[in-house]
Image 1 (cartoon, rainbow, N blue to C red):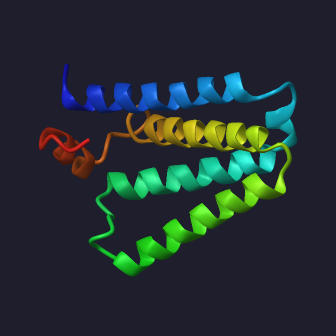
Image 2: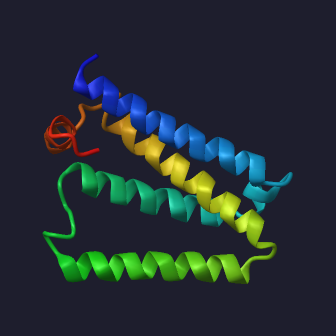
Length: 127
């Protein structure tokens, strides 16, 4: 199996596992009720995955990465504490993460080729 197929299968597996875990946690209507949280998390995850695939890492911009990471954690904690019950919020966050991972890998792995920097990292043993 070539490296591109391994990357697509691994990320597809990770995305599906996140979505299944979210569906197990979610109550009926929870994901529809918190659709905004699912969409925001999916967009953020896809953005991080796209940047990571292209080699934009904390080494490129330590302060920028730190600022974004702090903002993401703060927004997630705020969502967990503001929305009741917290379990439904965690399910929405997980569903968004899984959707973001799958969207990234479908766009850059199935529809378009996997970025070369991602392939090089995989060949070097860095997942």
